Length: 402
Image 1: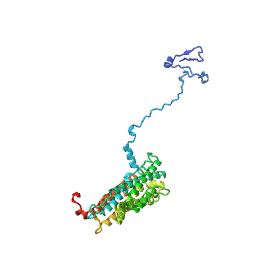
Image 2: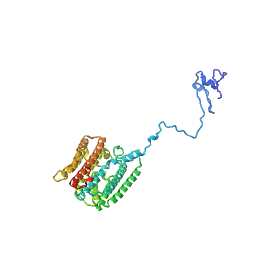
Image 3: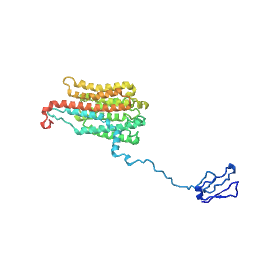
Image 4: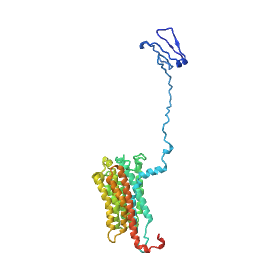
C-alpha cells in the first residue's frame, strides 16, 4: 500500500513516512491543533488513509449480485412431518368420531327391538337382516361426519368457536385444511350417506324415506343457511328427534319390513333425552363464545344455573321412563338392568353441579356419552333377554352356549 506523508506547521521540513508494517505496530501522534488547521485530504480513491489519532481506514467495497441467506439456527427435522397415523388422528378428531354413539345407539335399539318381535316358539332365533343393519350404520356415520364438517365450516364463517380449543375438530381453526375444502368434503359425505340411506330404506318403505329426508335436512340446516337451527334454540329439538324417534323407528322399520311399533317410539324417547343432554352440556361449555358470536342456545338463554337444572331433568327423565315401563306387573322387567348405569349418572350429575370451567364441561360431555352408550346397551340386552326367556326350551341344544 502506498505510504502517506504527515506534515505539521511546527516542522514543515520534517516528513514522516510510514510503511504498512509500521502502521500495524506503531501509532503516530501529533500535537493538538485547532480543527480548522487540520489539512483536508480529498478522498478521491478508496485507499487506506491514516491521519491523526485515531487511525481511520477506508476500504473499497465491491458490489455483488448475489445475496446469501444465513443458515437458520433451528431446522425442522424430518420427524416433524406428519405420518399417516397422525393424519388419521387429525381427521378422527376433526370429524368428531367420539360423538358417533349418538346415531349408533338408536340403530342398535331399533334393530334389536324389531328382532325380538320375530322371536317365537316356531322361530326361536328370530329373523335379523345383518346387511341392512350394517348399511344403516354406515349411512348414519357418513351423515354424522358430513354434518360435523359442514357445521365446522359455517361456525367458522360466523366467527363461532374460532378460539375454542375444546369445541370443533380444529381442521379449519388450526389451518390443517382450507374452509372451502372442508365444506366440499362435508357435502361429499352427506351425499354418500344419503345414497346409501336411500338404498337401505327400500325395505322400510316411504315413511323411512321421509325420516331420512328430515335427518339429512336437519344435519345440513343445523348450522347452515341464514337461520341455522343451532343458533335459534332449535338445536336441542333437532337432536331429540333425529337421535331419538327418527333413527330408532327408522331402524325398526328397516328390520321389520316397514311395520310401525308404538314400542319403538316409547323406547326412543329416553335416547332422545340423553342425546339432548349431550348437546346441552356442549352448549354449556361454549356458552361464552356462543354469546359473543350472537348464537342463541338453550344454555346461554336460561343461564348457567337453570342449565344445570335442565341437564338433571333430561337425564333423570330418561331413567324415569324406563322405571315406569319396566316396573309394573307383566312388564318387561329385564329392561331395568339399565339402572346399572346409575353410578355413571351420579358422577355426571355431581360433575355438572360443581363445574365452572369449559374443560370440566368437556369432561362431562364424554361422561354423558358413556352414560348414553351403556344405558342403551343394557336396555337392548334387557329387551333381548325378555324375548328369549319364553322360547329357551325350543332353541336347539347345539346352539345354546351352556
